[in-house]
Image 1 (cartoon, chains in turn cyan, orange, brown, blue):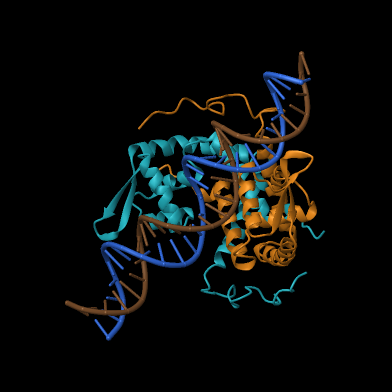
Image 2 (tube, each protein chain N blue to C red):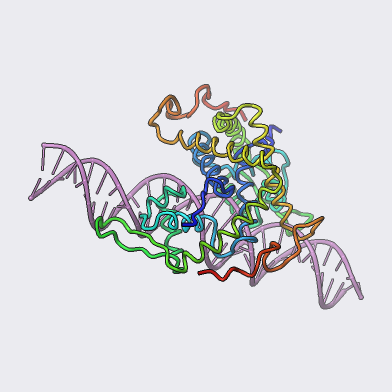
Length: 170
Length: 170
DNA sequence: AAGAATTAATCAGCGCACTGACTATTTCAG
DNA sequence: CTGAAATAGTCAGTGCGCTGATTAATTCTT
C-alpha cells in the first residue's frame, strides 16, 4: 500500500520526455552526434572562439560534462582547442570545416525531428508547452544559489519548513 | 551564422527540466536514493514479487539500466532477489523492511519537492503541463516499434522524406 | 613584489541510460 | 523427446550528468 502514481510526478514525466526525445533523435537526426554535442556545435557557430566554461554555460552543462563532450568532438575532428594567448588557463574553441558542415547538415534534420516530436500538439499548445517548461526549469534553477534574492534559502538541514525531524518510520 | 535558438528546441528544454528536477531532488528528497531508485521502490510497494523486467516496464527503464538500479538497491539492503521457483530465469523482487521504511520516508519528501517544483504553475497550468508532457512522450514512444499502425516507418536511410542527399556545400 | 583568493580545466568516482553480444532457462514445433 | 525460438538476466562498451579534489594560471591584496 501507500504506493504513489508516478504519472503525476513531474520528475518521472521529465525523464520519460527525455527518453522519448533520445529515441527520436537517434532515429531521425544522428546516431553519432548526440543532442548535447549538437548544442555545443550550435553554440560555437553562434560565437566562435568561446572558452569551454562559457560554452557549458550556454548549453547548460557543468564543467566536467562539457569537458567530456568537447573532448569527444575534438577527437572526431569537429573542433579545435587552442590555448588563449591572453589567458593561459583558457582554451579557445572553434569549429573545423567539418564541424561547420556537420552542424549545417544536422540543423535540417533537427528541425524535422522537432516537427515529429511536437506533432501531437497544436500551435497554441506548443507555445504553452515551451512556456511551462521554461518557467518550471527557470524557477528551479533560480533556487540553486543561496544568493537569495527573496527566498529559496533559509534552512540548512531539512531544506523545507515544516519538515519535522523525520517521522521515525515503521 | 545559421545558429539555432536552443530555447525553442524541446529536447533542450527536456534536458533542462530534468536537470532542474535533479537539483531539487538531491537537495529536498535525498542524496542517497535517486529518483529512479525511488520509482523502483514504489513499483515494488504497489506490486511485491515482481520480476526485474516487469519492474523496468513499470518505471520505464530498459533491461540493462534496471539491472544496475536493482543491484544498487540490493547492495543497500532495500530489496531481496530470489529465483522464481516456477521459472528459473526470473528473479522475484521484494522490499526489505528497510526498503519499505525508506519508501515511506521519501514519499513525504517527494510530495513536498513536487510542490516546490510546480510552484510557478497554477492548478490549471499543472494539469496542462502533465497532459502535454504525457501526450508528447506517449506519441514518441508509440513510434518506436515499426509495427506501423499508420506511418512512422517507410524509409531506411534518411528516416524522413524530402531529405535531399546532403547539400554538400562548404 | 609575495602571498592569498579566484578561475579554467582535469581527474576520479558514482549513477542513469541505451545498444549489442552472450548465457541460461523455458517453451514451442516437429 | 529433441532442436529451434523465445525470454530473463548479465556483461562490455559508449555517452550524459553531477560532486569533490587537484593543478595551473591569473588576479587581488597588502
